[in-house]
Length: 75
Image: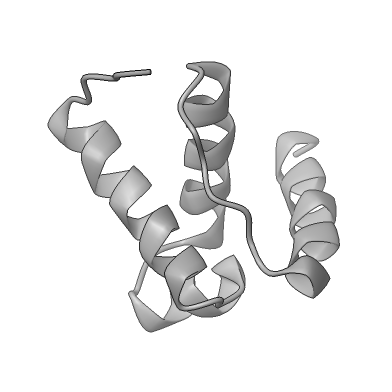
């Protein structure tokens, strides 16, 4: 399947793929790149809803990220 990304989508998807390639939890990756974890998680959700293949975070971090993401949505 082929997707055309706008520059903003490409920027965030690039960050998500790089974090995945490093096998780094998104929380650690966000801190190392001076990004917010909330922004990364919102883009994971948004890109997934758009049908784009979003990389998976490391297993131990994944369940924690879901909890954090749920917490940010409930604020």
